[in-house]
Figure (cartoon, rainbow, N blue to C red):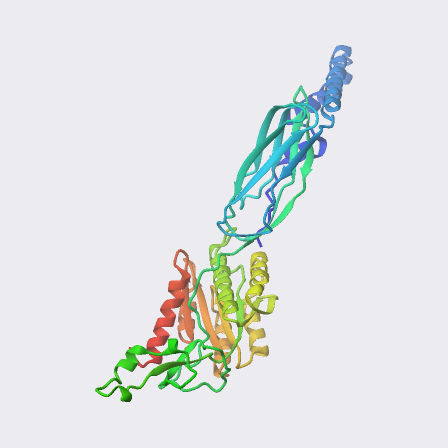
Length: 427
């Protein structure tokens, strides 16, 4: 999971935040300690007086820098949820009850959202206001925190630096990109000629083509297939047969998305390109099936992150869960084993994985032997094991190959078109 944590800036940054000492202040302290030790060793009163004077300057710098600034800052409202690539305009304003000078207005921004904002304020009179606008552009999904908003100032000698929190942190969730995909729950991909599947549920309009029949009173005229009707037209208009398209839902309205988050087989790096592509695929499939009215469940190797979501309102919980997910040490074998143990024929399973081991392929074969509907989405990258592609091709189910930089819609459409050719008997 992507978070807003940044790498440690170093020891000097930690000292500045904890002790309010700048780099020059640290140098002064080190010189004072060394001077005091040398002065006591050689019994030099002059050197000791210089050390005492240096310490006095450091104390004065700290006391003068500790003054309280009468500042009030406001930040425009930030959305709690964003999409990858969405641009958000942010405005911060700083008001002073008394005149101040040489103040920095600092807003901490995670690297995935942009750069930390630093606004110098040379002088601001009492009752005056200064505004600054910047943009947030999330480049990857995750959970982040914007802020806090601080005022930063230093003493005249530059030995200390102080901070005053003017605005608290704001949590933000960046949803993964969900593309439009033309995935459909299959029902008769193996049948020729097509027959009604053993498990079929009623649906208002249906998602899969079942056949063409004669028009009867009450049918929607928009379902008339005019090209087929034209072939029945003869000299006598009374002999014309109006034909309508008949559809069915398919085998199920329950979809299980199995997301393999095993870090061993995904590409290295933070973020992992292959894992981010897998998350986008899961988000696209989940959103599409929710729009179609299906029930969507998302499982990862170690846990279930979304359970039986249904309806358009469930898109936000689904994308929230996918925004938080990260890689784990658990393998895909455990994920498929749970699906095999609790699986049922009236459900549709989509496995999104970068690697298909022999054990995983064997368990998928058992699911197919039990007449369970399975689709494998194989995320390919430079280090993909060629045996994974071979094992996926030998399963006999639909296999979607995803590569970085390719459209998800085109990848799924290619499989859908191939399935349609097979179902209609064309090659």
